Amino acid sequence: MKLLCVTAHPDDESGCFGGILAKYSEAGVHCSVLCLTAGERAANRGGLVADEALKARRREEFAASCRHLGVHDGRVLDFRDGALDREDFHVVAGEIVRVIRTLRPDVVATFAAEGFVTAHTDHGMAGLFTAAAFQWAARTTRYKEQLAEGLEPWQARKLYAVTTEFSLKERQAVSLAPVTARIAVGPYVRRKNEAFGLHTTQRPLQPIFEHAQQQAGEDELFHLMATSDVTPMRMESDLFDGIREM
Image (cartoon, rainbow, N blue to C red; front, side, top):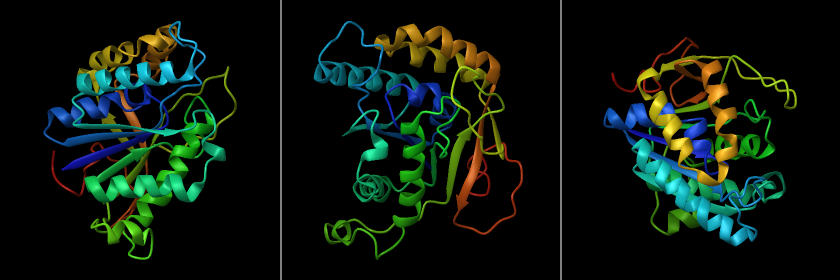
Protein backbone atom coordinates (compact mmCIF):
# COMPACT_ATOMS: atom_id res chain seq x y z
CA MET A 1 0.00 0.00 0.00
CA LYS A 2 1.17 3.53 -0.78
CA LEU A 3 0.28 6.98 0.58
CA LEU A 4 1.22 10.31 -1.03
CA CYS A 5 0.82 13.64 0.77
CA VAL A 6 1.01 16.80 -1.35
CA THR A 7 1.95 19.93 0.61
CA ALA A 8 2.86 23.55 -0.03
CA HIS A 9 5.77 24.23 2.36
CA PRO A 10 8.42 22.40 4.32
CA ASP A 11 6.87 21.79 7.79
CA ASP A 12 3.39 21.08 6.37
CA GLU A 13 4.27 17.38 6.29
CA SER A 14 4.78 17.33 10.06
CA GLY A 15 2.29 19.99 11.11
CA CYS A 16 -0.66 18.75 9.05
CA PHE A 17 0.09 15.13 8.13
CA GLY A 18 2.71 14.01 10.65
CA GLY A 19 0.38 11.68 12.52
CA ILE A 20 -0.76 9.68 9.52
CA LEU A 21 2.74 9.58 8.04
CA ALA A 22 4.19 8.14 11.26
CA LYS A 23 1.24 5.78 11.78
CA TYR A 24 1.08 4.35 8.30
CA SER A 25 4.83 4.13 7.74
CA GLU A 26 5.09 2.07 10.93
CA ALA A 27 2.30 -0.16 9.59
CA GLY A 28 4.31 -0.90 6.46
CA VAL A 29 2.71 1.60 4.08
CA HIS A 30 5.12 3.24 1.61
CA CYS A 31 4.71 6.93 2.51
CA SER A 32 5.77 9.80 0.23
CA VAL A 33 5.57 13.58 0.46
CA LEU A 34 5.62 16.04 -2.43
CA CYS A 35 6.21 19.64 -1.31
CA LEU A 36 5.57 22.28 -3.99
CA THR A 37 7.80 25.10 -2.66
CA ALA A 38 11.00 25.37 -0.65
CA GLY A 39 9.41 27.97 1.67
CA GLU A 40 11.79 30.80 0.83
CA ARG A 41 9.35 33.61 1.70
CA ALA A 42 8.88 32.52 5.32
CA ALA A 43 8.87 35.28 7.93
CA ASN A 44 10.98 33.08 10.21
CA ARG A 45 14.34 32.66 8.51
CA GLY A 46 16.74 31.32 11.14
CA GLY A 47 19.07 34.27 10.62
CA LEU A 48 19.34 33.64 6.87
CA VAL A 49 18.84 36.65 4.60
CA ALA A 50 19.19 35.28 1.08
CA ASP A 51 16.26 33.29 -0.31
CA GLU A 52 18.54 30.67 -1.85
CA ALA A 53 20.23 30.03 1.50
CA LEU A 54 16.85 29.64 3.19
CA LYS A 55 15.68 27.27 0.46
CA ALA A 56 18.70 25.04 1.02
CA ARG A 57 18.23 25.03 4.80
CA ARG A 58 14.53 24.30 4.59
CA ARG A 59 15.15 21.42 2.19
CA GLU A 60 17.52 19.94 4.77
CA GLU A 61 14.96 20.42 7.53
CA PHE A 62 12.27 18.80 5.37
CA ALA A 63 14.50 15.79 4.75
CA ALA A 64 15.21 15.41 8.49
CA SER A 65 11.51 15.65 9.32
CA CYS A 66 10.61 13.06 6.68
CA ARG A 67 13.20 10.64 8.04
CA HIS A 68 11.82 11.08 11.56
CA LEU A 69 8.29 10.34 10.35
CA GLY A 70 9.34 7.27 8.37
CA VAL A 71 8.70 8.83 4.96
CA HIS A 72 10.24 6.76 2.18
CA ASP A 73 10.23 9.40 -0.57
CA GLY A 74 10.33 13.15 0.15
CA ARG A 75 10.54 15.64 -2.73
CA VAL A 76 10.63 19.45 -2.75
CA LEU A 77 9.82 21.26 -5.99
CA ASP A 78 10.79 24.86 -6.71
CA PHE A 79 7.58 26.72 -7.37
CA ARG A 80 7.33 30.20 -5.83
CA ASP A 81 6.52 30.32 -2.13
CA GLY A 82 3.65 32.69 -1.44
CA ALA A 83 2.67 32.78 -5.09
CA LEU A 84 1.19 29.40 -5.97
CA ASP A 85 -2.00 31.18 -7.04
CA ARG A 86 0.05 32.92 -9.76
CA GLU A 87 1.78 29.84 -11.11
CA ASP A 88 0.70 28.16 -14.35
CA PHE A 89 -2.02 25.71 -13.27
CA HIS A 90 -1.27 23.28 -16.12
CA VAL A 91 2.43 23.17 -15.27
CA VAL A 92 2.03 22.64 -11.50
CA ALA A 93 -0.72 20.04 -11.89
CA GLY A 94 1.44 18.31 -14.48
CA GLU A 95 4.31 17.93 -12.03
CA ILE A 96 1.93 16.33 -9.52
CA VAL A 97 0.55 14.06 -12.26
CA ARG A 98 4.13 13.00 -13.02
CA VAL A 99 4.74 12.09 -9.37
CA ILE A 100 1.44 10.21 -9.10
CA ARG A 101 2.22 8.23 -12.25
CA THR A 102 5.73 7.53 -10.97
CA LEU A 103 4.92 6.56 -7.37
CA ARG A 104 1.47 5.02 -8.08
CA PRO A 105 -0.10 5.73 -4.66
CA ASP A 106 -3.31 4.11 -3.48
CA VAL A 107 -4.26 7.13 -1.33
CA VAL A 108 -3.47 10.82 -1.85
CA ALA A 109 -3.87 13.38 0.95
CA THR A 110 -3.59 17.15 0.59
CA PHE A 111 -5.40 20.38 1.52
CA ALA A 112 -8.84 21.65 0.51
CA ALA A 113 -9.44 24.93 -1.28
CA GLU A 114 -9.88 26.99 1.91
CA GLY A 115 -6.24 26.47 2.90
CA PHE A 116 -6.85 24.62 6.18
CA VAL A 117 -7.09 26.54 9.47
CA THR A 118 -4.34 28.99 8.49
CA ALA A 119 -6.30 30.05 5.38
CA HIS A 120 -2.96 30.11 3.55
CA THR A 121 -3.50 30.59 -0.18
CA ASP A 122 -0.58 28.29 -0.97
CA HIS A 123 -2.27 25.50 1.00
CA GLY A 124 -5.51 25.99 -0.89
CA MET A 125 -3.75 26.04 -4.24
CA ALA A 126 -1.85 22.86 -3.38
CA GLY A 127 -5.23 21.23 -2.83
CA LEU A 128 -6.68 22.55 -6.10
CA PHE A 129 -3.65 21.43 -8.10
CA THR A 130 -3.76 18.00 -6.47
CA ALA A 131 -7.50 17.55 -6.97
CA ALA A 132 -7.00 18.09 -10.71
CA ALA A 133 -3.88 15.92 -10.83
CA PHE A 134 -5.65 13.08 -9.01
CA GLN A 135 -8.20 12.96 -11.84
CA TRP A 136 -5.85 13.68 -14.74
CA ALA A 137 -3.17 11.15 -13.79
CA ALA A 138 -5.54 8.35 -14.82
CA ARG A 139 -6.36 9.75 -18.26
CA THR A 140 -4.55 8.91 -21.48
CA THR A 141 -5.58 12.31 -22.87
CA ARG A 142 -3.66 14.33 -20.25
CA TYR A 143 0.09 15.04 -20.37
CA LYS A 144 0.69 12.68 -23.28
CA GLU A 145 4.36 13.63 -23.28
CA GLN A 146 4.75 11.80 -19.97
CA LEU A 147 3.25 8.67 -21.53
CA ALA A 148 5.66 8.99 -24.44
CA GLU A 149 8.49 9.01 -21.88
CA GLY A 150 7.33 5.64 -20.58
CA LEU A 151 5.05 6.58 -17.68
CA GLU A 152 1.61 4.99 -17.57
CA PRO A 153 -1.74 6.38 -16.41
CA TRP A 154 -2.46 5.70 -12.75
CA GLN A 155 -5.80 5.89 -10.96
CA ALA A 156 -5.26 6.34 -7.23
CA ARG A 157 -8.12 4.94 -5.19
CA LYS A 158 -8.93 7.80 -2.78
CA LEU A 159 -8.26 11.53 -2.38
CA TYR A 160 -8.51 13.19 1.05
CA ALA A 161 -8.26 16.76 2.29
CA VAL A 162 -7.04 17.46 5.81
CA THR A 163 -9.64 19.23 7.94
CA THR A 164 -10.33 19.95 11.59
CA GLU A 165 -13.05 20.87 14.09
CA PHE A 166 -11.63 24.20 15.25
CA SER A 167 -10.65 27.50 13.66
CA LEU A 168 -8.02 30.12 14.40
CA LYS A 169 -9.68 33.42 15.27
CA GLU A 170 -6.54 35.38 14.46
CA ARG A 171 -6.57 34.08 10.86
CA GLN A 172 -8.83 34.80 7.91
CA ALA A 173 -12.23 33.11 7.84
CA VAL A 174 -12.40 29.56 6.47
CA SER A 175 -15.21 27.17 5.62
CA LEU A 176 -13.77 23.77 6.45
CA ALA A 177 -14.66 20.50 4.76
CA PRO A 178 -16.82 18.15 6.89
CA VAL A 179 -15.03 15.37 8.73
CA THR A 180 -15.48 11.98 7.06
CA ALA A 181 -12.37 10.22 8.43
CA ARG A 182 -11.10 10.34 11.99
CA ILE A 183 -7.66 8.77 12.23
CA ALA A 184 -6.36 7.95 15.71
CA VAL A 185 -2.74 9.12 15.95
CA GLY A 186 -2.33 9.43 19.73
CA PRO A 187 0.80 7.22 19.90
CA TYR A 188 2.41 9.33 17.18
CA VAL A 189 1.71 12.88 18.39
CA ARG A 190 5.07 13.09 20.15
CA ARG A 191 6.91 12.08 16.98
CA LYS A 192 4.83 14.58 15.02
CA ASN A 193 5.88 17.36 17.43
CA GLU A 194 9.50 16.24 17.24
CA ALA A 195 9.40 16.29 13.44
CA PHE A 196 8.02 19.83 13.46
CA GLY A 197 10.85 20.80 15.81
CA LEU A 198 13.38 19.64 13.22
CA HIS A 199 12.36 22.66 11.15
CA THR A 200 14.76 24.79 13.18
CA THR A 201 14.24 27.94 11.10
CA GLN A 202 10.58 27.82 12.09
CA ARG A 203 11.23 27.37 15.82
CA PRO A 204 9.26 30.54 16.75
CA LEU A 205 6.16 28.74 15.49
CA GLN A 206 6.60 25.74 17.80
CA PRO A 207 4.40 27.07 20.66
CA ILE A 208 1.65 27.96 18.17
CA PHE A 209 1.88 24.51 16.61
CA GLU A 210 1.79 22.73 19.96
CA HIS A 211 -1.25 24.77 21.07
CA ALA A 212 -3.06 23.85 17.85
CA GLN A 213 -2.08 20.22 18.41
CA GLN A 214 -3.62 20.33 21.88
CA GLN A 215 -6.85 21.62 20.35
CA ALA A 216 -6.77 18.87 17.73
CA GLY A 217 -6.33 16.13 20.32
CA GLU A 218 -5.24 12.64 19.36
CA ASP A 219 -6.95 12.41 15.97
CA GLU A 220 -6.10 13.75 12.53
CA LEU A 221 -9.23 14.54 10.56
CA PHE A 222 -9.85 14.26 6.84
CA HIS A 223 -12.56 14.73 4.23
CA LEU A 224 -12.95 12.19 1.43
CA MET A 225 -12.97 14.31 -1.76
CA ALA A 226 -12.90 11.62 -4.44
CA THR A 227 -12.80 7.87 -4.82
CA SER A 228 -12.29 5.55 -7.78
CA ASP A 229 -15.17 3.39 -6.57
CA VAL A 230 -18.65 4.89 -6.29
CA THR A 231 -19.55 4.58 -2.61
CA PRO A 232 -21.89 6.18 -0.06
CA MET A 233 -20.25 8.67 2.29
CA ARG A 234 -19.65 7.29 5.78
CA MET A 235 -17.33 7.94 8.71
CA GLU A 236 -14.01 6.14 8.40
CA SER A 237 -11.24 5.35 10.88
CA ASP A 238 -8.67 4.29 8.27
CA LEU A 239 -7.65 6.09 5.07
CA PHE A 240 -7.20 2.67 3.47
CA ASP A 241 -10.69 1.51 4.39
CA GLY A 242 -12.09 -0.41 1.44
CA ILE A 243 -8.61 -0.90 0.02
CA ARG A 244 -7.24 -3.22 2.67
CA GLU A 245 -7.58 -3.89 6.37
CA MET A 246 -4.86 -2.16 8.38
